[in-house]
Image 1 (tube, rainbow, N blue to C red):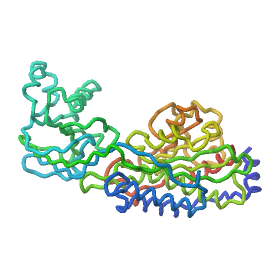
Image 2 (image 1 turned 180 degrees about the horizontal axis):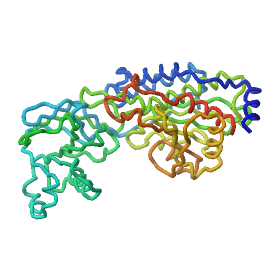
Image 3 (image 1 turned 135 degrees about the vertical axis):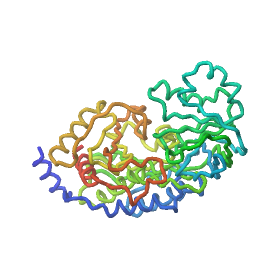
Length: 423
């Protein structure tokens, strides 16, 4: 089959040589630059990113859907404009030494602190008196001491449910130091901060000073960016390539660049569009490229699209969502692979024949990226991400364009290209 497919692709004018990463690196550098303020909702970062992508779609030669590259929607956001945290008179650095959960309202003051560790948690007598001891104070949660899931859940319960009317919670945790908008729900009059392990206090913390200035925007206007290339045999049926372009933006002066998450997915999507646009022959199906807004705050852009589609969702032959594709030393994972065995098996076969990637790993359902709203509407959809320990930055100030290795970018690119032409 491999030889037949190669001859077919050559006949169609498809170039099979290795893909250059120069263009992808250019896009990665652009989207991860300070110009876009982390592609969030401070300084209009997400707006600037959408404008850039619409112009890039036009420059590549993609056609707009319904006379426009953008689909407008509005989302609910809360921006942390200013954030300062001081323990025992020592100021901590936002973004590198502490991060805040996104649900915080404006808050300013100095508070007494109480340490809740494993010794405390296991003393039922002390826990029973916690309501009186913790009210109006800042609880410092030594979650890093937890050795089982039940203990970890207890610390999270104290932090997020705030059953003892604390003024705030500081979580000491050796893992999970990420800034995320995903936990945003109702605004609260208390704060939750996570400390980086390097900032764990060496002495008993007696006082905590905090100053938070936030802006709640119930209807922030954002844009999905969409373009397409017409197929040669089935122009009214579609293969859809998606990636979200937003990230978590800024907290105070700390910028979270979001290079791997998900400027990498956008870069590969644009690179595929650019490459296929230059082909003498197109794939059999029309190709739609969608850059979604507001994935980080709950898949808002993709959910809006499936509820307000610009074309019949039943005409989507297959959808591939790209999210965090900057590594690859251990291959790729295909979420929803078990639901679409024929397409998954085709990917595996193409990969084995082309020797592109170490493995194409199967994974079940997971509603963790923009494929999910489509899948829930009955659209054949998968989500692909690369695997490998060579780069672990995620929702940190360190997820920078110059650090993303693109270990197996070329292999994944060729696999996707061949897969698209094989459908």
